[in-house]
Image: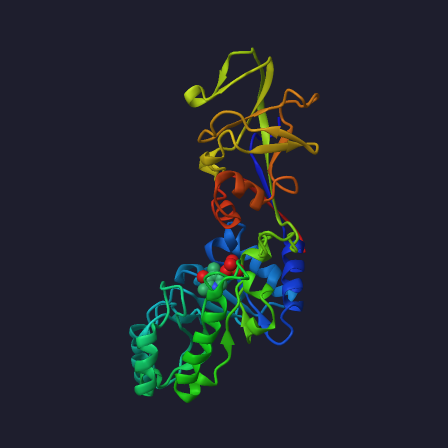
Length: 363
Ligand SMILES: *Cc1c(COP(=O)(O)O)cnc(C)c1O
């Protein structure tokens, strides 16, 4: 008997092709791979190894522990930077770069550099419109007055992060660019001359003014559309199929699932599949999404349960227990599913659960 488990398939070749396509869009600078949050739910180690093989030499994670694991997966060589930063020495020799998100971070690292007598590599993050992490304008002003605050650091990049890159017409894009240039011009000479890092996935589609020495795409590598409202230029990467555990006939007037929110308007055939909100198939999709079987849409009916979801397969003859219904795939991209749930493709991918059998299609 087939194991009643959903299968998440990750196409590493598509990820490599997406990276190459983004690199071709950024001819004057390098293109990193952002693999935080387990490569947006798809598996940081296999994804990063595929990116490395494709030519990627710079990686970003969010947490220190993600960086330590990534260094172990990739070996020495590629840059691995930790966006949330970490205190000096905390990487236990893994050779990670901290992103310095404020003068307090910089002070900790300059003190460590003085004590160790060597210049640790780091990335300086300047906030230009996110108000989240990064040096504030007043901190940049202080740096301009006290260049020693960065003394002894080997700044590999100075970066900023765009807030509205997925809205090309948003005025904040140009404003952030101008603020970034102005802030960089005020930095101490060594920092002023350091390479710069600007665009995320959508930023790579804002035109040549948003090019830099290092772009930092994440979502586009994984097939999320970096150009909302315009056809998706990226290849699809993830597919999720869940096995039908049972089929049953439901009479007109009978309800399906918790809350009895769906009531059959006609005699209906209901397929119950082995995936639910505990697997990241969001409960917000209840009654709003569809699966696909042999290219035919099957409406999700009733509420998504923790471990199970029900689909109306009345109009799909021939479906049998053990068959697999596609929840995410070519017919239901992460962006499509996200639109049904009132969220973004990023959240659909990062929510993907731990109970799937994961299969990696080699690059
Ligand atoms: C997550 C993140 C990225 C990647 O963003 P995408 O929109 O997924 O391309 C780049 N830079 C920073 C600072 C981030 O936090």
